[in-house]
Picture: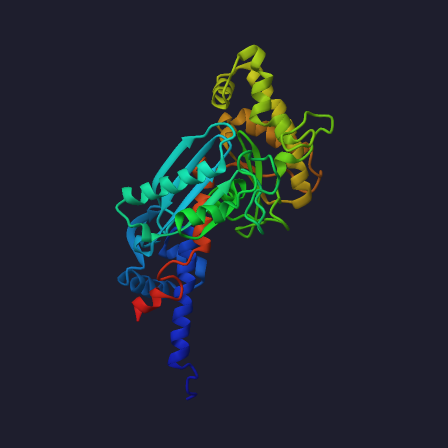
Length: 399
């Protein structure tokens, strides 16, 4: 008989590696069944069962019964005792802040409108105040907060943490956003374009699951686009990849607030759409436009259709250049439904390379108005070090 060459040390190392793989998958998906864990990690169901039991006894994960496809299953999530993360999304007209467990479950949330051209220093003060209040509201301690993911409706320079181009978020220019918020919160902060974070969320949890590359188009007060490859954000060299809102679609078009002429946002953004209806409909909000379009108002439908055609010109260029497997559309304009999505699909097909494939797969997002917030939380979880994470306290608790 040939003696085994596997030592106790190598078995121990293999077990630690398997724990790490399991925890990494749980962190990525937030909540997952043991059967799905086996598929995602390639480990046997028996190995999954043993390690899940050990992690549960150590307080690193929690388990609860559930059902999938009519069959009983065990749902596995990270334990809240590992800490908390916050997600923040700051747009041109509103702010959304959420507090989440390591499983990505939102425990508290705040959504509020913002004034036109709101200031960065005031906005960051409010973020710090809201997060602190949420931590207290759920009965946690400030020390449990491990990090913050922050989304801004503008491209972020990855080297400086500031908005790349002046004027895109007036009142936020020259502010090192991550550094400034970190000094207020006392925990690590990561910052990215909110469209990138929406793409991250839809790629991992929503309509983009199982596809790569994924393009996420956000259409509301502004027009943004995020790109992901293998569930990771593609930033480009400086962080401006996917900045579709400032793609020129009409060189003779109106001047954009970025300083260029004929940008997509200047022609098809909410400000342009609402201004075109001012003489006939008065001062509408974006919500008014969406509601009246749903009710069949002919002028509102025409304005949406005209904007959609310009959006499709830019989206077609993106598809020709990057060939995404799937395009996911989010933002308030998705609420219009088929009067927006059907023309978007048809127009985009006209502006993409014929014959490459029958049609571009364009789907509405699944995560709704929380999409970018969930992306900010996922981004924070990707970068913070959870106590008891893959190698630290977890292994001590299991020893």
